[in-house]
Image 1 (cartoon, rainbow, N blue to C red):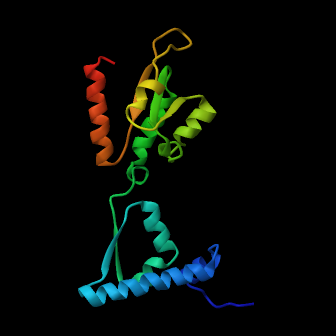
Image 2 (image 1 turned 135 degrees about the vertical axis):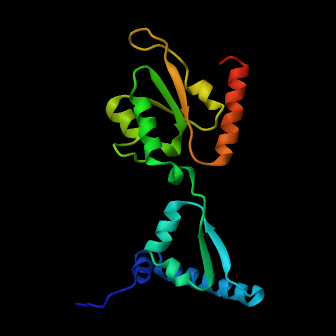
Image 3 (image 1 turned 90 degrees about the horizontal axis):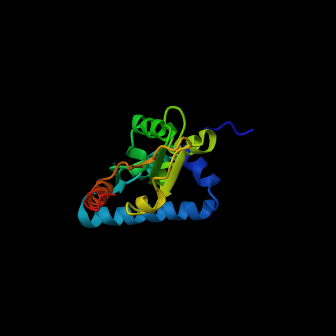
Length: 181
């Protein structure tokens, strides 16, 4: 039995679908990075946009393997990664309220809060959670309708994270108010 401790990188490379290709790709990145240093006198800087990328690079040992030749910078995070758990919990609480339609982008459905996700609220508690693909889809997919008791249903568009979402959604909100939606 081999009792030698293997590096996380060696384990990750061996577990990949094509270990030989994974090693060649890592060697190629190192080669390109060393050429960059020779030409520019400093390591290349690459921003990891998503928190799961940052985690995977650290967990697999790639970050350590590139140390000194590539400077990895943790970026702003994708919307899913940067949305606070308390915000997810608030979306879930809103979704579980009577007579509400929650509209959100699809990648938010499985993001865990402290007590579940929007998908769990939809499947297990019957919450009316709908996926929209852009801010303008909110009107078509989140129709007002009526509750079981005949009360009007309100719709909430839950958005998160990035600045580009805020600008687009803010514009849509302005248009909805202007059109008295």
